[in-house]
Length: 152
Length: 300
Image (cartoon, rainbow over all chains, first blue to last red; front, side):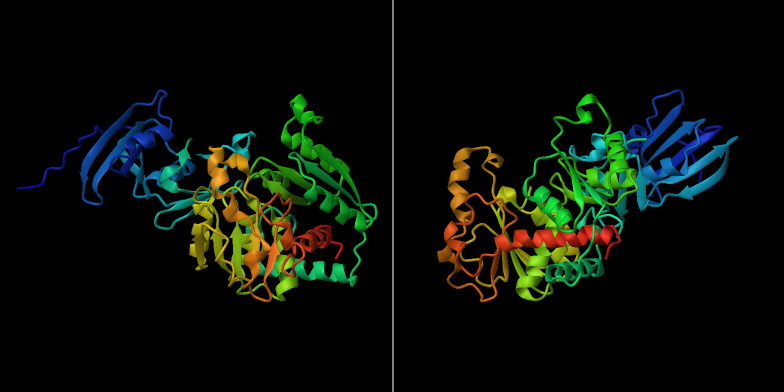
């Protein structure tokens, strides 16, 4: 009997698919990408994955994520894959790498940090250890990457 | 070295160059000349010792200073941005020396202006010039910085001087004893750094009985206002007061350091012992700051 592959989340014509998101993290991905505008968004949660066991997936119609935006997703789910779709075809598929440095997209949790009192972008160095940590360039406080407040 | 913002930025070589320059200045082997040089001392948070120490350092080298203390009479009160204040002051001066309650303020200042910036304390984060003068005091009294056993006592949670000093001494393979009430312990992020560097440390709750194997005991003040319940303060404060009787069995080379101001955490009966070094330590601050300014302004 031949294997039948079914698509549980509808295909999109143009846009971005973020696949292999660690199960349970998709809502955080939607939150950091601020997907509240006009783009249609479809999500799947706790789907079976050969690669990571259980996964979440999000499909965003008519929006192509930049590398910078994708980097931020790596902070919450390094296993995620970024797929760009054009006319129902996959035109680019990249696995995400944990960035070593990230500017602007992290809100420093230290209320006394200058990035919370002046209009300046935060700057964080990421240490890809187990567990991954991040240090604020300005106030020098170190946080677990999973605890970071991320915004795009 | 373009700025002095954090001990994290300094290599062992940078530190030794600063130590060497401070020693030469103290001995009169080099006499930096800062004539026609102006340091802007921007103290957005009150300070007497650090500000006077920088002021003295500059004037001992024939330089001059302009001083802003507090924010009461500044244009920050009129709504001027921090960046604009800095850029304006930068037009008048050759070096900016600043203290701020905002953490990372000096790092940001260094990004905004082209002049050298010295961090004279940013919130609970860094106080690198204090750490360097502490290192200079340690090298003067111990003859070396490597492999010493250092006790840090008092408020280790909020005290930026102990944070900077612990980082600095870790570079030289120090072993630490952290002595504090449990809720004023060294923060985890700093302890994690030490673990990553394979630096040994132990934590204690009393000074007494834990100083006989130390080379240096660095005492800081525990502020009463840190305690939610004043009774808790009364209960523990005696454990963090160093007195002469506790020094009976300390090592010959043992020295007591304190960033000052002292309140009652070192009893005055310690002052007359050969172990007290906190007042010479303050004097060392001037030589160290002379060295810092001279190096940053390319005068040595």
